[in-house]
Image 1 (tube, rainbow, N blue to C red):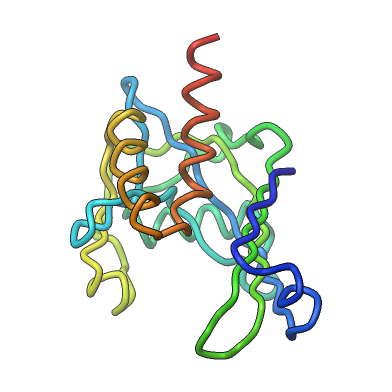
Image 2: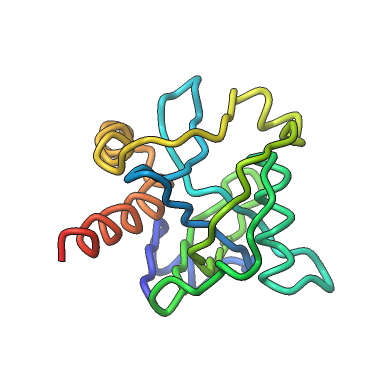
Length: 169
């Protein structure tokens, strides 16, 4: 399990904590990876999101890909990436709480037929779009944002770097 802590240790120990379980998809096609592109900021994240009450991680994965990419996951293609677990811990300044996001990452393939994504208001506002790009292009864009202090992109970038390392083996 890889943990990224973006808050001070004393804050983590003293502030109230909220745990959020989530899934992320790794979709590879023709030497490119399917990612959510935040067009307004030119940065990339793996598609996925929170696991809702009563939902299994696989059900959440299928739902999130349908919502964010407008695509249907091929159920037989789903398999866990490495040990699957990545944890992102950060302080939500507006609520003064610690958020612990536990991500399980899965490889999967999607059908070629797409429907219109079902984006939230926030996803529309940030001009999110599911695209296929090279891993190198996504890493380069995210690295520029980490240099500017946008550290939340560190989590998907770590996974992208790991995928690049695996591909090179």
